[in-house]
Length: 529
Image 1 (cartoon, rainbow, N blue to C red):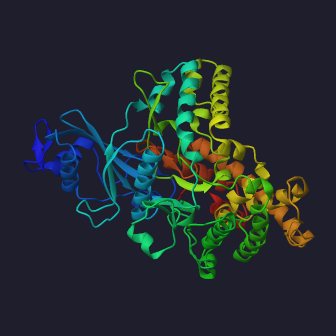
Image 2: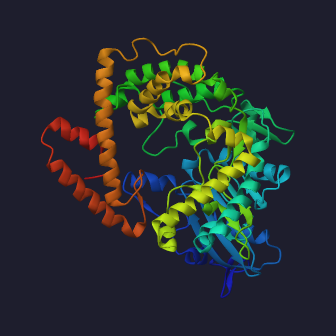
Image 3: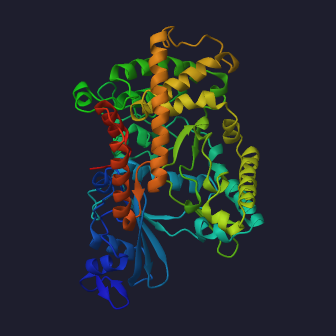
């Protein structure tokens, strides 16, 4: 490999240095943002190393008509790092590397490629062609990777602000018509799709889809110890990653994921817990009680009718959809299949793509010049999406009509230690409250003393404190202008860090009691000195 005035070639030296100059930043480090919470850990988890020389060599070998690489851009998300190469013949190739927060690189990469190739051969969904890939980090490039063609067209994220109302509605129709085809495929189990000959499947259970593909362990992040700042200990339950043949097994895995988060006694004693957190023993009791209720829930007629193992895009938003540059009403490609898995149909009930969301972005408000017009536009796009689901995907459409009271326990049971004991307790109480109207044939299995007078008093106190802290957290994050994880653009990091510290010192100075100060400190969502 080497450099020439017109790009990187395979004949001279200095290619690695030129490559770094092209992308304008360290190719290995995460440079697209910083975090106001656990910044070092977050960036370290997204650092990906590889052999630059071998990557450039491989990219050019996949472009027979090209002799040099003219440019390269680095794009970064939470779960992957992408390089967009442009060769001297005008073609573009994508090299994609998973970050550690996405899950085990071997399984994540194998599953993404298997999903893409399976859908290309079993549906008409437009998906970029995979040119080369490896799930073995010991390959010459030195990391699991995927090299694929660039998506046809332009990003919908780029086209959307310039599109008229009729264009947007027709575009939503085009997207829905194409992407819902995958939701009609039948699968034998819940989990992630892999190539059947994957080396890691030889020592664990899997369910064949056909001779080439199988359903194996889920790559879902809740089943792996990859959540920065919220580690899993597996002290009270072993990892249960599937695959799961029925809804009962699937439900048990969610409870196991919740138990897996609970720290051993020595870990708890070393930290001041949030006042609404609840003890480990309380979480164990809650999850054991919840486990019995969730098994009843799994047998509920509405869950049974919406449990079919279903595959759907894991991040169906404008940035992952490409449309024709000449006619933006036509979807031309769908990218980023890394988060796609086979889940019960009801899993997707609350998932709404950003192009069909009822919320209004600042760009839409400015483009329409009136908030009411932006609201009307969002409503029309949402209606177009829902109507499309009703016609093209009965599974997804029916799942959207399931009572949320039945679905929320599935969403909160695996994260009690992260959220505190309050949310899952609340959802179980709501389920018990409406039990007789939700189609159950037997009494709720919550123990009679689940809400004894003493427990009810403690729960109400915790719930009140929990809600107060949620308000404080919401206000703080809005003032600092960041999300739950504290991500900000790198150029704003020092400014936002200083603002957060100032807010922390101001609020803490108004708190007198030592215990109250520790409570506030333990619940403060961002790092501070």
